[in-house]
Length: 183
Image 1 (cartoon, rainbow, N blue to C red):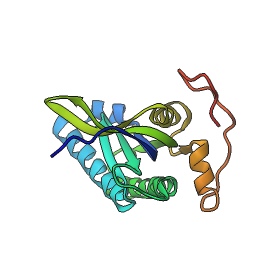
Image 2 (tube, one colour; image 1 turned 90 degrees about the vertical axis):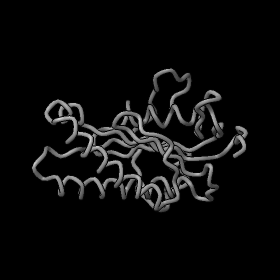
Image 3 (cartoon, rainbow, N blue to C red; image 1 turned 135 degrees about the vertical axis):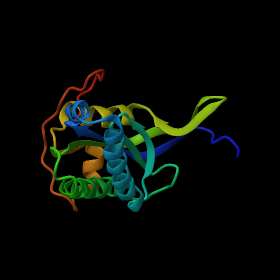
Image 4 (cartoon, one colour; image 1 turned 45 degrees about the vertical axis):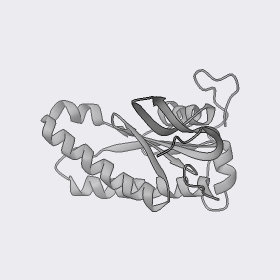
């Protein structure tokens, strides 16, 4: 196939990270650990696809998903937040199904805005992904702001979902490496 030329797109980016995974990793044999992670990823991917999201990549025990590229979505912000909400329910079911183990929890960060979307990499390994400030802020909302069990969303996402979800402001916070603060 031809190369997907990078272009500017309006999207919503979702990062979901497992909390408590490190201690689980220390207490499980590698094969069992891989099985747990594969089961978790499978369930989360199903939810992301249900809301027309694209699974961008797995980063260790974290998931990066994009709503609005390469598939154009009118209401990508709402789709991402609906997916996040269902991912939490899917995780509760996952924990019930693995009742012998300590429950896993997740932190989710979501942000909407412009990204560069396209195939990035070297000639022998390229992958479709999204880059830019919007992505970095989504990642920071997940890693620095969200507490276990929380879904934290950026201001543009909040604008698109405020009629569908009850949101609570966490205030305006400085994010690592950002000049301006983000609500």
